[in-house]
Length: 298
Image (tube, rainbow, N blue to C red; front, top):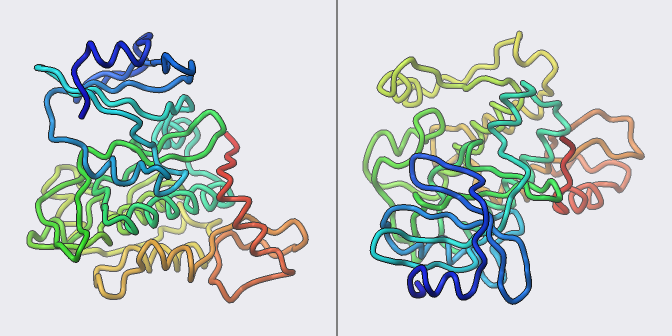
């Protein structure tokens, strides 16, 4: 980390507060040299954000990661300069609109899978994937942020510890012991479920009840909530929300074996989620490239 607040204010012009939570405040800031608008997150003293630095590059692990540009530390707080995501978060989007149309959810799922695959290639697991930590930038692209719970598993190092948010945490995390980066894939599967239905797959009134439901892993698709959701989307969620970690998809497999895309403009096939072998009318690559540009319709 760089020096304290004095060093911060030499390099950045700090503006108005744009967010506040349990763990600190977020203010708009501007690079003194270029005028670029960024975000400044100030939190109480915390460990050095090594995992976030690893995925921030340069180049970033994925364009769908909120990159950490600089970090400053003083006696009371850590100040993180981050990419500015002024478009709100996925939690607020689903809360205001309810379940999303499958083409829109498919596009967001593709961007999330790309972010996770990039992080995992660099040996970093996010460990708290949830709609609250998925932000939209000015272009509408989805960005994975808040790496405060991230863990390092490079060189085959195992991870352990109860980390994450009850509704989204993987069963092996709840069970205790060691686990792998596939905990992020489980959490991403829950996010897809929430986007498509507006509900969580494993419910409980209290944290212990939620953990019990997660450990049981009884995945269901109630007809009232999933009547218009394709079989392909449900199949993908089953592969991501698989209790057997050895059979659960990795983030790379989500991208390489199960392509997520909106319907091809040259095809009448209404599939939104489809296995890789279901290439149709030569449009698969175009669709994937379109998604990874990060377009998002609010």
